[in-house]
Image 1 (cartoon, each protein chain N blue to C red):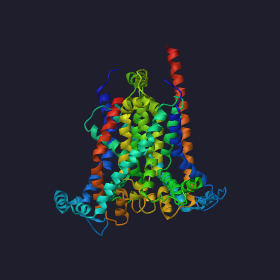
Image 2: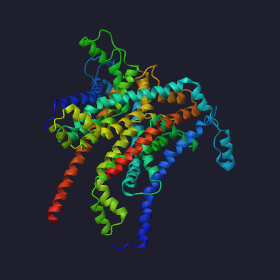
Image 3: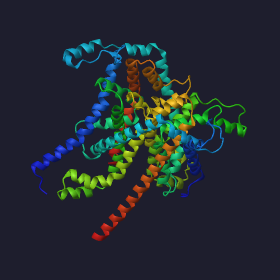
Image 4: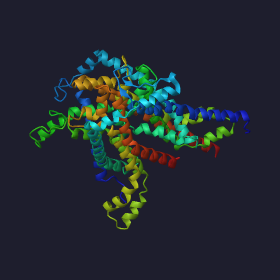
Length: 308
Length: 274
């Protein structure tokens, strides 16, 4: 088939269209907003609509732009260092998210392992059963735990009925409840990539190890676990990064002792209506997460390219 | 090597699934509870479902949520499918790294950062907030999920059919609609459903980007939960869980079937030519 000049032109235009539309969309609705957040984090709080100064004046052109720049200040960032609420929120968010990620790994690894080693015929069903809670509302799943963890809740009723405890345990409104919430909500995020890497594993390696007299536990630590590391890494990032900024879980399950930056940001925004400070909080949170996010994206792209 | 499932594997599967499903199951059971107290069983009753039907506010917000989810999932599916094609098919071009970065970053980015940035964008361009600003923000973050789902479908895909069509002079756009799209359709449908449920589920982004008159169901549930648990919410949640479960099971059965049929047809075609 001869390709004429007009056809070539058409193909090129088509290519430009397919790349251009999603690209432009993401530039306008995903990337540009971050620059705006950054800009506003350098503005002053004002009693106005919108509640910050200065506002870009497009009609003033370049001079207006320079003037706006000169009015920028770092007062909001200085403020973040002065009130130790923010500092403690960042640290405690990272600690909570990290601990929760480790617990999720401990809970999720046996599940993913069991699924990957189950008979082939079961696997699609098991996979669907892991994905199904992911499709049902996150808010509902967190809410369901309130009824379980309350003082007079089902867990305490059950434990008292068993006679394990005589007084109800206080779990709701503590950090323990937040851990339970994060582990529960994010478990599928960890199990799926982990299952994918465990399932791909070549079992003949284990057979060889067994034939050579390697005990199962040693075979697990020296063969299975290292080979599943890509899945472990991807899963842990998928849990850790969103968990750091989590709002719903600490708000519904956590108590006054629970400090998480997502909740602090929400309060700053909705209760204090301080947009510039919320923006500064978001910028610093993003900076904390830049390295894990870039690493995750790099990892994803490599996996996608390898598969392609 | 033992091939049968070991006791360890079975135990971990059973415990894992018990952990995943017990809370949801308890919620469903207690939505049929006679008592107002959520944790005390006082007999079977469907009265909370009746109350739910009389709760205008809740129904209205559910309707807003459904419309937002439908519009944003549809737009996200179109954009996300294009994005997946770009990632898998269009090879290298300038700005590819930035593009794939913008696709993967929203998957992990804490929602609250996305929410604030969407809001500030709408304020900066002086767009009054409400129904449409929620739709736009949902479209943006959902398209990235669609892109990833469709991408995985495109990766394990036999390109010879497409190449044959192109060789026979079928224009690329037509090739896409006649050959490629039907083959990746299960991925596209799964992507749409994922986008739909993500939108239906979202609390944080909607709360930041909403305006007067546009309250979504999660926002309504959230405000009622904060005021204290009511069994009506259990009923509403049970209905949602039921709808999603049925939808997911139906789609997976349908895709499974159509896949089996396609495989059979392909085998037949091969047998006929060979």
